[in-house]
Image (cartoon, rainbow, N blue to C red; front, top):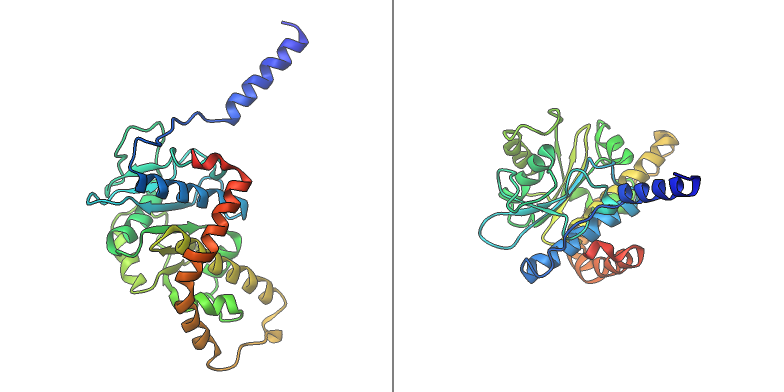
Length: 272
């Protein structure tokens, strides 16, 4: 084999390794499920775009409409920028794939997400991250502090769950739900952040606010606590109420449509 042929063969092998052939499910699932798949795949791509992914080790999920309590979870061996609507794996409440799939799911991802999907009707979409800033705040004794407007908007929605090791024990689901109470976001101590909503857009906006608040807190504390300007008494509570009143509409009517357009501009292949 000549040098040119060898280079061509190496490039062909590299291209084959850089792409994954995923058969399309469009037209093979209901229109309602397909829309959820597209939105969830877009959320994966946006998480990658914002630098929130942790190789393949975090998870976003969404409930599939119907009485069977199925939900969609990312394949365990795809990077987030590779996730498509058709590659998402539909699993049951035991974590088993409902339909034939070449992919595998993540036991830890199933434990955390299924706990919320099964316990809360409003947990239609769940996002869980391991960002450096989220990890830093999860390891801080006081958790999220009301230092910024963003933190105050989301702070009343946050619950805390103590670290128990890798989340592979299904018994932990009951403790996660108990700690969650009536909140819709959680800081998993020494682990990361989590948020959910009735739509993928709501879950995404909540996790965005939580991650931005964590990033700002880490930067503010790096200058030393003595120089912090804390908000006046009563302001965090007022801001939290304002956040509850506006977040749902802001997510569904404003932020998510714009984010979805952004996902299409970045790479429309997620919608295949």
